[in-house]
Amino acid sequence: MAADRHSLSRALGGAAILVIGAAGAAKLTGLAAFAHSLALWNTIPRSAIMPIAVGVPTIEVLLAGLWLIGWRRRRTTQLALGFVVVATAMLAVERATGGRAPCGCLGVLAAHASRLDDWEWTMIRNAALGAALAFALAAPAAPGPHAAAPAAARHARAFTLTEVLACIAIIGIIVAFTLPVMGRAKTSAMNAQSAAKLSGHARVFALYQQDFHDSFPALTFPEAEFSVIRCETGGFAITSRYFHVNALWNVGLADMYYNGNVRDTSFRSPWDPGGPCDECGVASSYYWSCSFLADPTYWNGETREVPPRQLRLTRPAEVRFPAQKSLLSAYLPHEPVVWEDPNMPVHAAFVDGHAQVFEFRAVVPSERSDGWEYADHRYGGHDAPARNRPALMHTPNGVRGIDVR
Image (tube, rainbow, N blue to C red; front, top):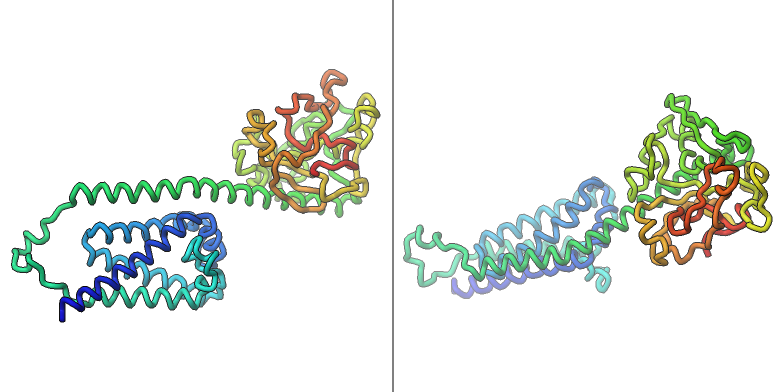
C-alpha cells in the first residue's frame, strides 16, 4: 500500500514539475512577449522586468531538468513548491492592487489558449500544481534495497558523468534559446524608447508653435556667418553656422521647454548614447530637418538660388503632408556602413506629432545637398555622399514635400 502511494505521489509530483518546465520553455521561446506582459504589471519595477523575464523561465526549466536526471528529487520538489507559492503570491498581490495584466505564464502557448492565461485560470492551475507537489512531499518514501544501509552511505552519492553532461546540455539549450530572443527584446525596447523620445520632442515643437505665432524655431540668422544659440537658465552658449542648428536646436529650446538642461537625456538616442561628433557634449542625437530652414524652392535643384536668398523661417501652414513630413530623425552610429541597406531602421517624428520606426526602403530620396557648395561652406551644410548623410534632412520641395512613401 505504501509503495502504491509512493508511486502515485511520485507520478503527480513529476507531472507537476514537467508542466512547470514546459511553461518555462514556452516563456523562453516567446521571451519578448513574456517581458511585455511583465511590463504591464503594477508591482514590478522597470529595472526588474528583464531579470525576472529571464530568471523565471530559466528556474522552471532547470527544476524540470534536475528532476528528470534524478538529482535529489525530494529537494527539487520542495524548490518547485516554493517557486509556485511565491509566483502565486505575487499574482495575488498584483490582482489586489488593481492590476489586470495577463501573467504570461504560458509563454507562446498563450496564443493557442489565451483563456488559460487569465488570472482565474492561472490561480486554479497554480493551486493544482501546488497540491500535486505537496502530496508528493507528504507521501512516505518507499523502502528500497538500500533502506538498511548506513545514513552516511545513503547520502554519499555524487553526480555521475551523465548527470553533469545533462545539466550542461540543459544550460546550453537555455542559453541558445535566450540570447537571440533577448537581443530582439532589447532592440524592440530601444526602438520603443527612441520613438517615445521623438514623440516628446514633437510635442515641444507644437508648443513652440503656439507660443511663437505659429512658426517653427528661428535660432540662427541667414545673413550671419555664425549665430550664437543661448540657454540663459543653464548659463550655456554656443556658436553655430546656419544649418548646423539642426543638431543644436535643443540648446535654443532648453530654457522654455527642458528646464534649462541642454544635456537632458531625452536628447540622446538609446542607439547613440555618446552623441554624433559632439565636442561640447550638447548636440542632439535627433536631427531637426534642414528643410524647415529655407523656402521650399531652395530644395529643388532647378529653382535654388545662391544663399542667403531663400533661407528663411518656415511655418506649419506651409506643410502639405504633416503625416509624411519628418520633423526630427535619429542619428544612428552605424549609418555610414549600412546606409544603403533598404532594411535599415529609421527613427523619425513627424509634423503631425506621431513618431515611428520604419525601414529605409520607405524613405523618399533627399536633395543632393543643402547648399554647402556655396560661399565657401559658410552656411554649414551637409553636402556629403548620400550614404554618409542623415536621412530625411533635405526633403525635395522642402516643407511642401514628403519624406516617406
